[in-house]
Length: 252
Image (tube, rainbow, N blue to C red; front, side):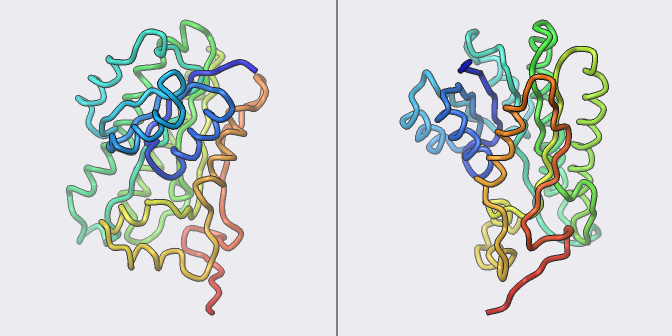
């Protein structure tokens, strides 16, 4: 099996962490980013520095992003796959009642960081005439819901960027894909509700959501598709979900 070099942003929890583990267990090399160095160091201890290269920075901070990306050793610079996974939701309020800092955090992480990281690695993919860029989208890009205006807008931007990039790179031999999960039980709701565990837990009551591993399995499948196959857009939901706000909840 060919060993591939894969960049994953947001690797310290949830989907990013599960994806990295699957790939490294298969023998691939992962450059993983996150804001929590202690969690990155756990992966270094588990898999070794030859398999996992940690980059500690906030994907929404373009200055920190530039410093970190420029620190990557030369033998890790040429990627086979870029997985733009990092992203967050901040707050769940009517737009008129929402916090401007929350808007800016979602724009910075979900859009600006994704685009900046893509622009950094793209020249080498173009020079090689091969590569795969996979972006983390959301069902919220297509189905807007109340109190989610800025989050939905940020994910709609990711979707539009992905489609446009696919067109721009059509002649370059580079795959561009997007995965759009529905409800996934990760730290997503805990971050959205700013550490309120009770409120975050209620999101998943009465149903079985997707796990980070469920989504990671599909992400890896997308990465491993044959050269001529591009799973350009994948919508993934738990059985109990039929839309952003439509769930089959069972009460006990």
